[in-house]
Length: 577
Image (cartoon, rainbow, N blue to C red):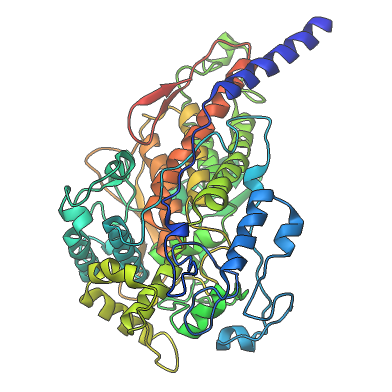
């Protein structure tokens, strides 16, 4: 027992030493927080996340720069008392449970204010994996950058295309128009448009096609249907019922879980009037007031709006838990370096508590919670990047002639182009009974984004971490024996039912490709909702990958078996654990 106790302590020391020897990098923002000022030389913080702080009802700017500094003070200290002293809600109504709201959706429903989310999580410590502050992300694009122009063309276009079925992307006129707009942007059309950092150069994308537009950029993202098989198919239940993955039912023990999502009301967007926008920026808690279809009430993910609904309510690591259960239920092989894969009469041991289903499933939750802490530090303590909905507010003000203190928006507004802005204006005009038009970003959810900054993305960081775990345990080159996509019964009717239909491919889908794709689907699903940008997705995916690799490196010390894992990386190449 004494030897065991000493061994246990030594292994913990060794794991701690691995973590200690990881370099803690410098964390660098894009420098915009202290850059923009009004004519009285007061900071405007127009490039920062200010949602929830008191905003001026007419200009949309924060009422008092001191409020932002108080917000930052609480973030830096992690002291709940500093958070409680930060003003929340419309001007002059801090501490009021049901403030005075400007928009019908908030006023008629008498909603309360909405608090910020886990500002202090990045200050916590952990007993496993990289410290929350041991990893970093490069600076986010600036308001006057060509990269942001392309990102905003993308999210505006996605908002206009939420009800176009994925199965029709190759022929849909709106998708073709979006591709043309994106490919004409300087960031895409001119590789030498800007003096780029290495991180920016790595993010720069090639001209789009119907096979690549609005997709991720990891291996396998451009192969097969847009939606990953792991968001659509099921696996055999008890007694081999149902017999086909085409049923979309996943076995959870003796239960089955249906992959069909609740169908949000088609063609219905939110925050398309200034009153709605300003209420949400002032923290109006209008979440849960969206409307849904009753026929069908549920369907397999067929449109971007369906995907946005999935990521509105998912349990964060839900898609990867499902993917793991699907792979286990299919009998997908493990990585060749993992033990206990020979027949029972030879190995005489099966993987379960280690190197088996429960081991992998529990690891998904372990990496998810650590991913959230690391990305919270980037969000709140480093970058504090404003959400796309806020950029949409500044675009609207600029386009209606209220350019004071928004002169930096000139590059963005010109880059968006008159035709896209006109399409947004007309779309928003149809979204409310009063036919009020605006240049605001149409949102899939009435509450818009969550109450935390945009960069990095929580969903994408968790996606990167969880998918890395699955690629470490499963044979990533194994070919899936099927390929399906969800097709609407009536592609011209976004409110129709959907069903899975087989798709023929020149080469089969692989575990790696479809796991990468599910990570991109979930991450970019948030872009379809209007709450994130492309850079939030790709940089956060890399952050999550490094968190998972660090945890695997440390856990490797705790097992007596001689084993290895070969993990394919998002940017190419492999890491051997």
